[in-house]
Every structure is written in structure tokens, then in C-alpha cells.
Amino acid sequence: DKYTATEGKVFMNGTQALVRLPMVQMRRDQAAGLNTGTFISGYRGSPVGGFDFALHQARKHLDAHDIVFQPGVNEDLAATAVWGSQQISQSPGVRKDGVLGIWYGKGPGVDRCGDVFKHANSFGTSPNGGVLAIAGDDHLAKSSTVAHQSDHAFMAAIIPLLFPSSVQEFTEMGLLGVAMSRYSGLWVGYKVIADTIETTGVVDLAGEKRQFVIPEDFEMPEGGLNIRWPDDRFAQDERLQEYKGYAAIAFARANGVDQLVIDSQKPRFGIISSGKAYENVREALRHLGIDGKTADEIGLRLYKVRMPWPLEPEGVRHFSEGLEEVLVIEERREVIEHQIKQQLFNWRSNVRPRIVGKFDHQDRHI
Image (cartoon, rainbow, N blue to C red; front, side):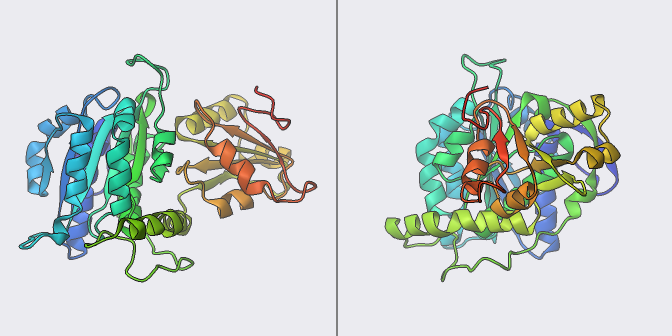
């Protein structure tokens, strides 16, 4: 059922949800009249160490959906092969409308692939393909020589980063990432940690049927943002710097990637969080006995960020309006905290809330 069911609720773990993802996308493409396939390559390492094993186990299901899995000799050769999957439209005799590319590797593999990521992201994705780069981060050095996070490596390559908080979101957020990649021409990062990918639960498949909308407030440049040939490197850089990132932000805004989970009539305090840290916040609120009624009485707002970078600004500003203080809860180095401070910097001092996270409102490390 974890691979064949199309409705209802199914029991699966995070790794199996990622194996299911391209099958769902291929079924969606077929329903839309597209003849597409998927190419998956990467290099294993905890917490994505079991991904290739699960793919091998699901081989008959993959074959039925034109999904090809070829492990890489190393991370950067795998990434280069995935980059090639976006170039089939430039080849004579092509038999597919597009190929979805999926790369996977643990955090140090993301660092290793910096050169390929930057070149491939600048070059662009296919409008009927798209690329997800699945990064397995080990924040606590559970199985690594150093603790690491991939956020800043993706940021350096101008690759938007999605961070699902639970198994329920794994396939849904992956589908959103594919649609975002096809629209913006960008690779899209997809971050998992042991506390999410190694958990098991009952997943409601209803979210997989969601249809994504095209932003109405973004003006696409002439020729679009996807891969083409010939393509001058300076033209690539202009699209990357001036359009692609903003297209991803517009797509995230139009499709409600970030969510105002708890609101109150007279808000005073706000909490903003992402990924597993968000689930920890919800658990803490439950232990404190803070439900929707109590939150309204004390003036509490809770904002869930599912794309930590780039942070969608309009949603953040709406969340921050009227607040006295915003508490940012995120794992390891600050990513959201720096962005929210920058986005609210030009607000008048009498309406700008205090921002507290890794640093307090006087910029002292907590």
C-alpha cells in the first residue's frame, strides 16, 4: 500500500515516503497528459543511508513508472548525472517530455557538490522535469565526524530549501518542490534529519492530490527561466540573480508554503519555527496546556516555516504585525533569524517587534 495506494491512509516511514514521491509525480504527470520519467542518483550516508536500499526493494514499482535508479560512484558524479537529466530536451530523438531528477546525499556530500550545484542551478531545469536535491543532515553528529547542516551550502548556490517537519509532509512537500523547480528553473533543496526520515506514521494521502497554482504577481522574463541552448553564462547569471529566486518566493507565497498555525484577536507574542523544531514547539505548548483558547487569551501567534530560505517576506510581515516580540526557534546556526531581522529592519521602531532567537534584542548571544 505504501507504494500502490492512491487514496486513504497508509503506514510508512520517511524513507519509504521519499521512494513513493517520484511514483506519485509520475502518476500526476500522466494524468496531465505528460510523458515523463525520473532519474535518481546519489551516494548513501546516514540519515539517508537506507534510501538506496529502499529503492532497490521497490524496483518493480519504480520500473512500472519509468523511474531509473543508478547509485553514484560519489556525490558529485551523481549530481552531474542528475544535471544531465535536465538536458534531454536539447537532444535529437528525445522520447520523453521531461525527466524529473532526484539527487540524495548526506550533509558533507552537499559540501562536496558545490561546484556541480552552482553550475547546474545556473544552467536551469527542464519545464517538465525539475530537480530535488535531498540532503540528509546530522545536526548532532550521530553518525558523522562533525555536526553539520546543509542550509548555507544551498544558500550559496541560490537553491531554495524546503524542510518538512514530519513523515506526513514528506511526499506533499516533495511534490511542491518539483512544481517550484519546474516553474522557477531552480534546483530545490529538500532537507531531512534522522528525527524525521527515521520516524514512522500513518500518512493521509489526500494532500498528494493538491494542485499547485501559478503566481499572478510575478512577471516571467522573455524566454522563461528554464534550460535552453545555446546559453551565454552571463545570461544565465542574470536570470539566476534577478529572476529565479524571486520566482521561487512568488511560487511559495501563491501556494501557501508557510503557515500561520495559531492566531489570536489581540496578538502580542509570536513564535516562528521550522522543521523538527516546529514539532518540538507544538509539543512544548501541549505540555504547557496552551491550546487555541489559551493562545487567544495571552495573545500568542505561531508561524510554521516550511521554506527556511529564501524566507517568503509577505507572510512574515503579516505574522509580525502588532507583535511586541518574536521568538525564533531553529536548529543549529540561525537562518530564519537573520532573514526576519533584515526584512523588518526598515519598519518604524515603534511598530517593529523585538526579535529573539540565537541572539537577544540587543544582539547578545543567548
